[in-house]
Image (cartoon, rainbow, N blue to C red; front, side):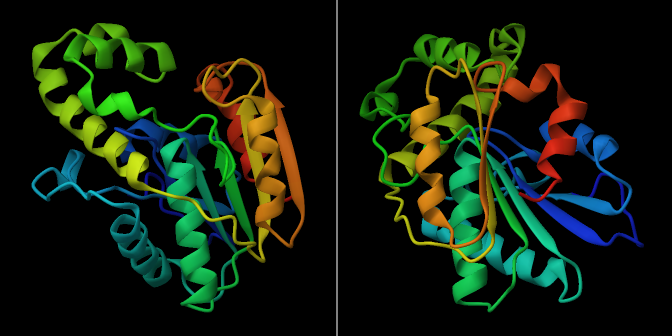
Length: 240
């Protein structure tokens, strides 16, 4: 999805949504980016306009397909930034590895938000999530702060969202991140009251790049950017 096409853009940003999330959740980000940056939001299979496609059960398949799509869309001339939030941070990291190692791409920047560094046991999906009841899953999603709790009480919404979230949780349970250094710059961002990702669990992302690194700690929880979207989006567009 390209919310605001910018044919004269000098930089492209590819955004990877969180577990259970779709591209529409992030479309408002485009309005807060500098005019020289074009936002392209990755839509995973099985949601929104790709609802008819089967959900992807493993990270390797998801990241491989996303890397192919990004490589085709990025173009050789424009600096490329990958941004991922929560599960999307892991997807973006794996896509960055594939682009650098298999496609020979020169990424400018990777931004990982609301996600523990590879190798950390903190902030990962607990094994019990596969057996959560609907009410327990509803409480889990409401606690994250990314979904309006009133929507989670709507049967039609639950029927659509809950299978996607369960699939993404299973994907994360099966995923083992390897801290292989990238060549691009890397920024990690975390909320100072994130109940799943404490600051010390995000700091080791520094080991995942030979480029420049910065860690930003923002006020708020797991979806810290919801109340300060303009400031946060501008921050993510900056290089370390």
